[in-house]
Image (cartoon, rainbow, N blue to C red):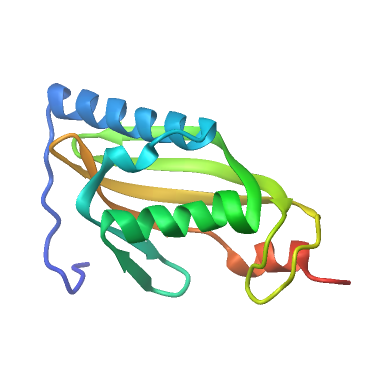
Length: 148
């Protein structure tokens, strides 16, 4: 089945795979410790929330979106369950864990803990992350913070 963007460009080889693995690992390490994870994103990176199709473009905007989720709306972190890298592509399976500390989806901070599984598909190019496609069940996240 072919999508509307045409066939994907597949880059392979052990050097490409190792560079991609190192880039994604450095990005995740910096994200978890509060470092400069944006340094691992391409200038024109895209972030697509697959549940809604919402696309955010550009390093500054994507960093702002990630910061909002991990540092402003939640005191959050990713618990990595698995990472697969092949050529210029990577797939992550993880859990978003944290505490609701700021407004999110129109809901004022509740202080509630959250734990939601998610996955990310990465496209890499020249040692940077060019695209992130996030599979995060927003309804599950909202249910965990909503008043019962």
